[in-house]
Amino acid sequence: MNVKRNFSAKREAIYEALASTKSHPTAEWVYNKLKPDIPDLSLGTVYRNLTVFKEGGLVKSVGVVNGQERFDADMSPHPHFICTSCCKVMDIPGGKLFFDMNAYDHILKEYGARVKSHSLTFYGICHECAEKKDE
Amino acid sequence: MNVKRNFSAKREAIYEALASTKSHPTAEWVYNKLKPDIPDLSLGTVYRNLTVFKEGGLVKSVGVVNGQERFDADMSPHPHFICTSCCKVMDIPGGKLFFDMNAYDHILKEYGARVKSHSLTFYGICHECAEKKDE
DNA sequence: CTCCGTGCAAATACTTTGCAAAGCG
DNA sequence: CGCTTTGCAAAGTATTTGCACGGAG
Image 1 (cartoon, rainbow over the protein chains, first blue to last red):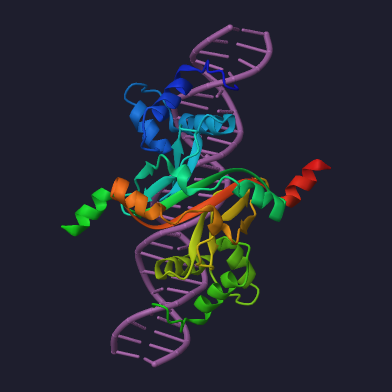
Image 2 (spheres, rainbow over the protein chains, first blue to last red; image 1 turned 90 degrees about the horizontal axis):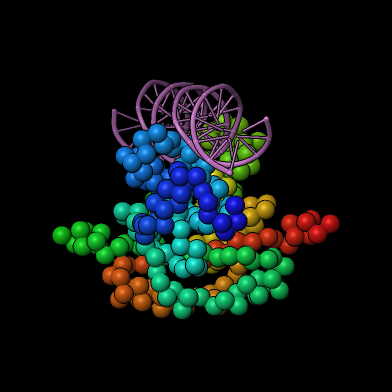
């Protein structure tokens, strides 16, 4: 299942659910989103397909936030901001500005380790939560 | 329990175990390391104290690797390299070079989000695993 | 006496898996 | 028919929590 996408209906739906949001959802979120339209969908299937997507390079994990893994169908490398108050995950477009790509080379030379990817994540309080706190 | 450190014996031991290694261990690793010397130590206590340390700012989480949370007693901000083959976590000292600290400002202005910290993680194959594969 | 820290075991929470049935070419 | 995908429920794994006890001040 390389880049070809003749998925089963459910697999397709799971991928589309992921691709259609910027909320970096959990497996459960995907399940709840699709369940009304696909009543015989099971949570296990969602998990299984998310694994398939990760392995196939169609989706990547943003990491585990508050005990649940968060997924992103946007494969372009970009930083994220995670609100430690509400657990929202936001993209930070243009974040390349903050990162020097020759880090990969440096690490190879210095440690002999072959870097394949990286992740840059900011933690703090999002705008909405900051306003709530200020009330 | 701010920066003062008149801990209980077990709490102290747990912190020391963490501070004495660069392996970014799991709760279980700490437990197994200490168990021989402290036979009546329980895993729950390790978890509880790790939480105390995180909240007290004595220790930080490197994230969840392979289903288990990894901890670091080195609070100075520095990147990590995670080997996706053996799950080893390495420090990358001097990694500040790769990161532009005015990102915090940028995110505040652009998104109104108050960044408190960040984490930069590289993924790939470590030297040892690369050699094994080449055999 | 009071509080904090702890062992222990039970409880949670998320995720994975075995298996038989269903789907599809 | 043979291979893939799925539902369902059970199992698995990591972590958290309730409770009663124990030790330090």
